[in-house]
Length: 351
Ligand code: PHE
Image (cartoon, rainbow, N blue to C red):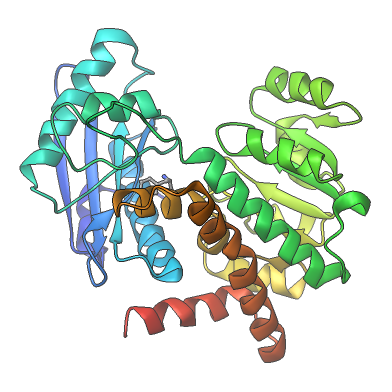
């Protein structure tokens, strides 16, 4: 199946797409503006090498739609949008700064129609570069040059979500009897693994970069590292996908050996039918945008002038209670939590 830019744009139900080709670096820039019912479209900037520009646009669109749900679920007044910088290779040094500066100017030209921050492949330092030319960046204090990394906040929210789901499934949130598989040990999966270890959980780790998984496993002790291609079939209680999306699909779901899925990756289901596939297998699935909202909460609150760390932590920890509510309602309705969460979102968007 080949997707084209034309068909993606024709079929999209979002507000629109801003596109630009950066000739100097050979990068396609896509800003997918999905929904502004609750506020200006706001979402991270992903930098990645894609097989084609159309696949990059498709990712931006899917991620933008996810941001609409995420903001609605946490009741912060932003809308859904996401940007993708589809680079031909990983850029460094001056080339990277040049691209980010031109991209920042593009954002500035939109005069607030889109606000951005860190996502997979970009760093707080990249946001600092962008902030030199536009104010529509979250996670950078433009006066002091201080940056906030949303990753550890996202990890904190996922940790709260895991405890809530474990309590729901096993009747106790004690992590000491639980085995958790953290897949992807980057900016979120790394801190999450440490929090889980501290909470007493047994860990199974995997990452595309096998060495990264092995060295963290060694550091944490009493921890197994798995090869990335067989990782989803690792026996565990909780599977926490913390890398790319679509790891839950028609091929992987029958292979899963877990009771619960709670992770930080955006768009974990490859297609809507995967919610039903998990439900039929009796695997409890925590909707991704409910549990991975910690970073968005932190950046959103900071931009609204909230500086108290404890207040931000409290809001992030509340992800546990929101998830518990959804799981209880879903079980009463005998449905996948995906549908329950969708209803919460639709209500907030007043559809
Ligand atoms: N990219 C992260 C996410 O998907 C953090 C982020 C949230 C960045 C909101 C910018 C705006 O949640």
